[in-house]
Amino acid sequence: MKVVVGQGSCGIASGARKTEDELVRKLAESGMGDVTVEKTGCVGNCYLEPIVDVYDGEKLAARYVRVSPDKAEQIVEGHIKGGKVVEELLISKTDEEFLSKQERIVLRNAGYINPESIDEYIAVGGYEGLRKAITSMTPDGVIEEMKVSGLRGRGGAGFPTWFKWNAAKNNRGDKKYMVCNADEGDPGAFMDRSVLEGDPHSLLEGMAIGGYAIGASEGVIYVRAEYPLAIARLEIAIGQAREKGCLGKDIFGSGFDFDIRIKAGAGAFVCGEETALIASLEGERGMPRLKPPFPAEKGFWQKPTNINNVETFANVPWIITSGGEAFAAMGTDKSKGTKVFALAGKIKKGGLVEVPMGLPLKDVIFGIGDGIKNDKEFKAVQMGGPSGGCIPAALSDTPVDYENITKTGAIVGSGGMIVMDEDTCMVDMARYFLDFTRKESCGKCNYCRLGTKRMLEILERITQGKGEDGDIELLEELAVKIKDGSMCGLGQTAPNPVLTTIRYFRNEYEDHIYNKKCTAHYCKSLITFTITDKCTGCTLCSRKCPVDAIKGDRKQKHEIDQDKCIRCGRCEEACNFSAILRD
Image 1 (tube, rainbow, N blue to C red):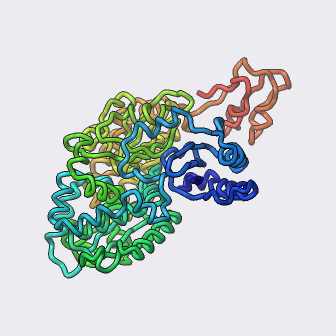
Image 2 (cartoon, rainbow, N blue to C red; image 1 turned 90 degrees about the vertical axis):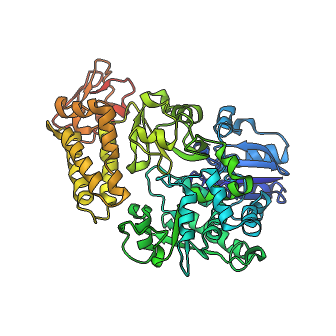
Image 3 (cartoon, helix red, strand yellow; image 1 turned 30 degrees about the horizontal axis):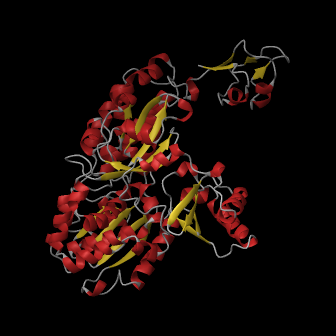
């Protein structure tokens, strides 16, 4: 028997390490010291962490959720020692459906194997794809298998993987590089992080297969320094792979040499663009370069270079082992296979999901994510991060694939899904994302550097109740010029959140500008708090007010001095009688 504790970043943040320590202590006290306690990555149910799995041999006997340290004794005494499942801590049937409704390729091992054990990865078929590729396939054969699979880059652009590999292979060079873009910077996105923390060997294996295909001898993983756990587990995995002969010289006796190193990035969002990433790798400021030449011709140190993201590489071992046709059998005609999404925002079951391309948005949000928190009305979903756009609830039947999502004005991007409810102000949401991209602009292009700043200033005025006639049209005009005048994907996509919110929620912009009202009652400058006749005079609201703006005798209706009120909302939070009206 063994106990496995989920220790991705989400689990650790929820207290998983303390839970693990307590489990070890209780097992020792109970004379069950022979029961091992191991770690794994995030299985995807982030909202249920800390998660503890109890295995009887190789069989999962029980999955316990929200296991705080004080509940460890129940599992040790009740299940491990007493042999009885602790029903009150068990995962529910509906929460089990969160996983059963998915199709997992990239996340096939996450939450099930120890990410710090290469033996566990090998036990589930790890490195068999690499062995097959370099001992029984030619580089052209590997690329052909990728072509059959139809795998497109999962980093955002959706470019055919085989085409990029083939271009790098056909460009001559005394040295070539295989680079992984693990600079995951979208707010609310944590797909790549989960793979790095939960199944790092799948990335290493995918990169090695790609290196063989293009003729590269060296791989570099460019990963955010803000991912310390991911970096630590990658370092462990690389060391283990070298010891086992899966990386380094003469891999599997094939004569193929390939090794991987890590480069920690400083957290610049623009370094998600491949030429800016290359500049950063070379020790320069992360700024994009003109293309052509493309990295496949002149990339890292002016050598032929291929760049894919973590999720793209993690698909590769499965494709080589199972065959390109098996991958192509999932998804749609032009968007093959599965896609990992990070569900965040106003959703009941936030976490990681992997589904076949083409599944309708509503099936992901409601079928897997279980809908909106507190059963509020679903308003929109932001896809593609700051470079993406808002898709309204009216378009929730839209299939999740590259072509159909692009038609809405959003993009699939790397896979972030930020769900919004009726209380979300779409103007403020556009302001938030534009503020992010404005700060992350490298400043090389005038339109990106100055245009995003001007757009942000307009949005800030609108949310402060200072919007003017013509602001919407000015935003649209600036957006077109920024998209046309920017060199890289950051500037070319930065206006997307603004354009999509204007397209689908123009009425909210008009309410802010002409009626000086925030439709969602969110923007502070446009909110008024008043006390209704439900007030019992309990005085709780006046005691919570930080500026002494609420007056009234005890057991008498109170009043708010609007000149003093700073619209913090503390009175509304404090009132037990729903007597505070937000308008």
